[in-house]
Amino acid sequence: MKEKHIVSFSGGKDSTAILLMMAEKGMQIDEIIFCDTGMEFSAMYDHITAVKKYINRSITVLKAENSFEYMMLEHKKRNGKVGYGWPDMRNRWCTSYLKKDVARRYLRTYEKQGFKVIEYHGIAADEKHRANKNQEKNIKYPLIDWKITEQQALEYCYSKGFNWDGLYEQFRRVSCWCCPMKGLKELKSLYKYHRVLWEQLKEMDKKSWNKFRLDYTLEQLEQRFKEEIFIEEHQVSIFDL
Image (tube, rainbow, N blue to C red; front, side):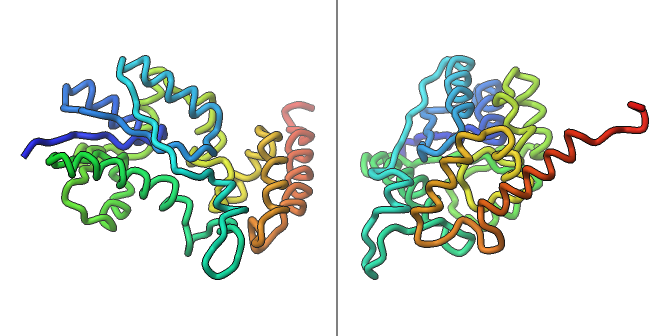
């Protein structure tokens, strides 16, 4: 059976590392696909453009029929509710709709043509448990095979000149900027370094039938972050005296 070797590229450190390493090793790469959620940081889109130039390869951009904001706020559900609302750990509809389903439909077109599709996913050796949840035989995890950790993958990308305009200094993960699964430290970075996106987040939260977080409102977090940043910026070290 003919094979198609396809790299699933998110643009993050791990998928960037496997793409660059596979290219360096001369491994077969028939296509590179990127599922665009429409909610990536602008620096991520710049990074993807830079990677394309570096490897001199095109990247197939896949998009869902409807946008994240439409599905979150306007999509009419069978139960009568309008919009899926903010995703959470129990219902990550965004990952399914904007990424997994889009990729599956696209790859199925190759299968219908008689190809065996081999996918390459960016999961690092120290996150092997994520790969264990997915038992599909035709998905490969090169970083696990090569025993490359998340930190090593990031350092490798830095060594090749990719720095995401500092995003990894602000966030542990650089997926969708509006992800409710972000911790308080990352939300503080969003408020501090990406104020326009923070304001957009508040507007989206006003329109959603469920709230961004259960423990704090975004307004409460904003006040907390303001106070913390003020203290941090006005702390005087004894060595400054």
